[in-house]
Image (cartoon, rainbow, N blue to C red; front, side):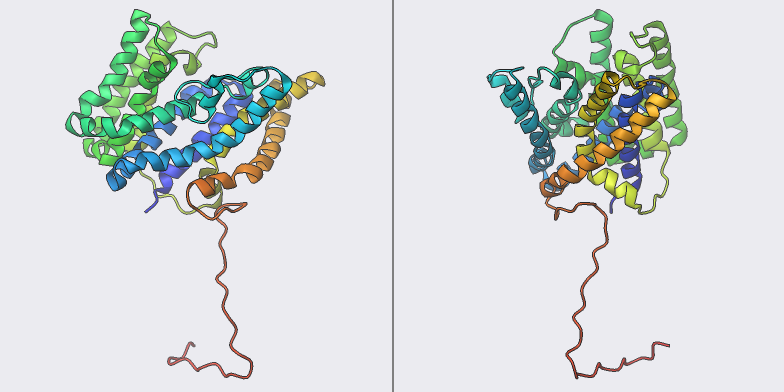
Length: 348
């Protein structure tokens, strides 16, 4: 049975990411560490897929991930080549399978700045069949490993490749997703989980206060504080909170189009913001934020309608314009002149 609470978390995290990129408010990264939540949810679902399908779960996850990326990549690469901001080189092929950061030039440097998530997601999917047996044998040590690695990288000031940095930053969240799927968080009990969460949240806040980034308390600039705070948050929302969520059309749409929303919202935000700046419109403040939220929402709705069906095809579903719509089952009328049979039991 589908867990609607997990759907709710994913939907809220997706909306939070969009609003954060419009407003730039650092508080959002503390109130809801959305990217870590998304990695944790994906880790839980990946563990479930591995248990059901074994290593073939990797193929299924990649098949659901890449087609939506290819749609925006084709447009981006064609635009970069047509405008002369880029010339053909093998790095552009990484848009087909982004195991490293694909090349982006010109306007698309900003427009595609968020696709690091798909690169890191792909690596975690590829590594999961190897990590899963290790986690089952040594769950605590496996979860601690990425946090310990990030602490060493941060304190020692070691420079590592972006993929390794991200695996250390978000790998713990992915593994906490494993713990959620296996029931380890639930077995710890709420009181113990809250104690562990507090033990992580306090040093996270202390480290962030002592080592603020260029945007202050924006946790995206403070990797160690981000990882520890996110771990505490995940323990609470996945281990301590278990509400019953009813079926909801908005929830269905946001989950069925989450990847499309994520991929297209940054190009839309950048385009709307730049257009407003060129025409002297307010960008910050309640007026600037309000009109941009409306403009981004309208344009994003058109793009979801245009490209969202790709997610249906990738998932093996019948492509639809708006997910979650109930399809009436046609009933053939009785032949003309043929009396309908009387019911055996009175319906009154």
